Amino acid sequence: MRKQRPDTFPSTNESEEQEERPSKSQLKREMHALQALGETLIAMRPAERARFPLSDDMLRAIEETSRIRSHEGRRRHMQYVGKLIRKEDLTAIQAVFDSIDQEQEQRDHAFHRLEKWRERLIDEGDAAVDLFMAEHPDADRQTLRQLIRNAQREREQNKPPTSSRKLFKHLRETLAL
Image (cartoon, rainbow, N blue to C red; front, side, top):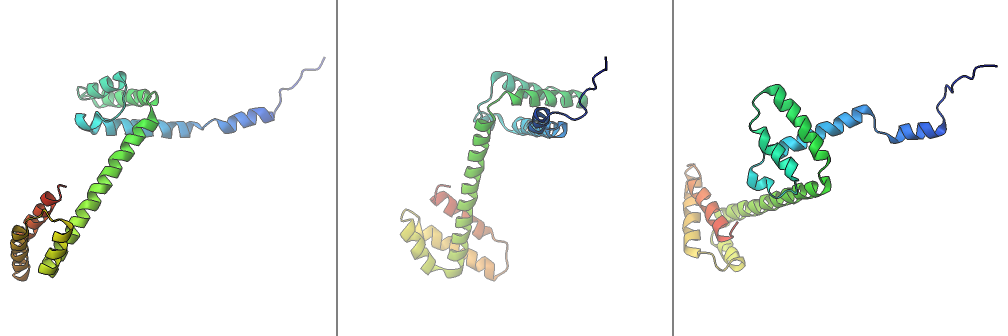
């Protein structure tokens, strides 16, 4: 009786399974990404971290990180944090990160608008003050005009922009940003 040779070529089912499974390198990249996410969460202040839907085990692991002093111990602990993150709701965590990014973008946009108003007020003077007052009637016109005059004078004399900063601060307080 002849011995049967094992198949030298994988069957079609086996090759399909191999294509569906991620490679070892891909798994390592994903684990490093999860560890980086864990480090980001650890670096946050507790008030910021409270917005995230984290399990009790994950919160304990994050708190425990501050007590670890050894480099190797911290490295192993970060691997443990990465392992715990796999069990977390990553879509909910990503949604919180997205909302934080969106809030930051809105704040940046508001500050850019304020900077444009400040430059416009300093450049155009009373004409821009009238437009600003039309949009924001609760603003203090007298303080605004005084800060603008001081900022214009500083600009003409090439002095540091102290009044310009005060004007920006006043605009920020007026618009409650």
